[in-house]
Amino acid sequence: MNDILILLVEENPADTSHIKEYLQEKHFFHFDLKEAESLGAALSLMSHYDFDVVLLDLVLPDSSGLDTARRIITKYPETAVIVLTNSEEEETARQAVRYGAEDCLDKTTLSSAMLTKSVAYAIERKKLILEKYDILSDLVLALDKIESLENVLPICAGCKKIYHEDKHHWLSLEEFTDLKSGIRTHTPLCPDCKQDIENNL
Image 1 (spheres, one colour):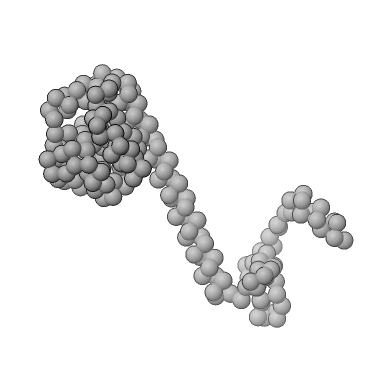
Image 2 (cartoon, helix red, strand yellow; image 1 turned 120 degrees about the horizontal axis):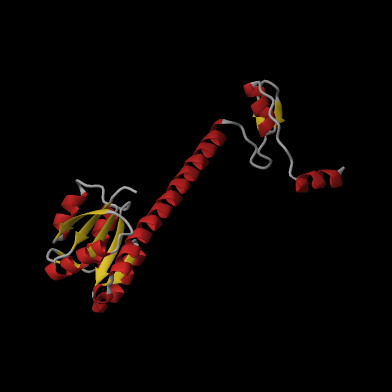
């Protein structure tokens, strides 16, 4: 497995030290860690590196609260974000998750196992989400192509047959394709459709 590239965005040196120890204690994965003490520094690093996950404290010298998470998630939606909070910031952390962060962890109860598992799961969740977006994008593109085809071809709005100008006849999609391509296609019927046809004979 390739090294996981992690960006730790944390102002407090003590918290930074603890988090680095937690990551090194469990060897669930190999990682390369870079650090930033402000949102501006984090965004600068993210413009140069393709991070797998960002460990993000919500209270930074140049940003605080939900806006801290929002600015990173909006600018880099393909990067998994784990919010690091204190107990009094729990509601803000939940809002960050609703906005798009993969997880939120309370620094006061954090452990090595908790942190490393969260990193691994966050990366996998982000991959699944991006795959779903890709599928939806492909579906939207296919629907757009169908709509464009309907605007070009004389397709019946009811039965979806296509009018063939040379034959002066309405043809099914399969018949139209056969004539245009010169290749005979075979379209099977499911058992239910076969039964419906037999019942109507």
